[in-house]
Length: 389
Image (cartoon, rainbow, N blue to C red; front, side, top):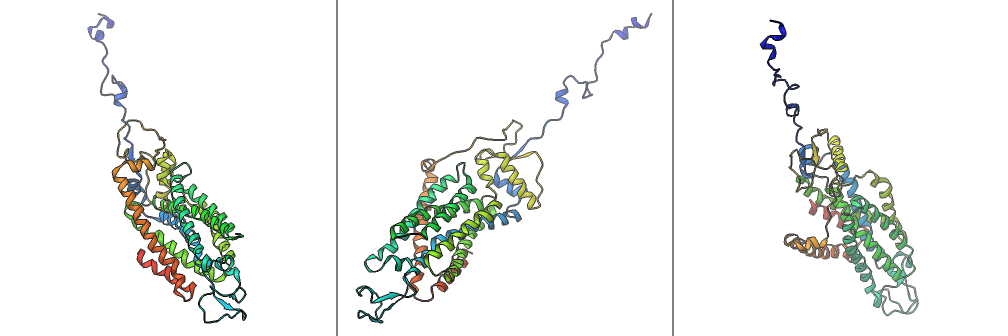
């Protein structure tokens, strides 16, 4: 029988199913992709980046310097709106023993150092007009309240935390310098309102931008530490006021640091990774987290890990996820609709309102101690710091 007629040669060929290349389904034999680890910002800081390392310390210090700018624009009225000393000019029956110039004949007394030392002297805010000193301060804080709401909203918008801080510093510098050019009281009051509007957003934007890249265990301590920069700004203000006696030159001197902050500090500040994630810029947020890990000398995986919002984190399934997500939006109405956030909002507003009355009531009235004003302001600022600790 020929070789071709051998029955064994008629048996059909059966492939070796143990071979991954010749099996019935090569796709099943290929290795399955590893699941992507999806972490929220806090979990990634804790696991890979470090909660408070060299990167966070540098970013925190640079950003929190903006609090000193807020202190300048808020507390400058202690020196600019003070009532300077006066003396008799030698005519009109003026008595050196009098403690008030009210009722004295014009020309019978004069301000020591001239009227340019204070708005009170230059605009005549004494006697029946004295209420205008408190009025302009109230107008400033009214502007702060409006500005905090406006820039708080803008910091969640496309402008971002860093962009909002940029805008408020520009406005602060402009309005502060324009205040020094005020020809009359009502122009002065208007410019203080506008300065308050921009100042109200400085601390808010700086606080959020400084604390969001910090891990949850250290965020509370860092949040309280931002106030050291505010008190430090008040202490520095007392030194600035010592050299700039005129209220106009003082407003310019306290506004120039805002320009310096824009040029020398803000370019080296990073945007918040949390804002990037909320706005759907996942790739940009992930790159910031990678820089944090590298600076902190922590290992950050090249792949296999990504960022997600809190409600989407810990979903490590193999289903496909978009790198870029849609921006998450919300409004004050969303806060008011939820019972938990509504209660917290009302409590926060009430607590801040009463704390502000006490704090600024004590700080702004240091002028009434009657001793050296510059020294009193400096000591009052330093005395705050143990309380923050």
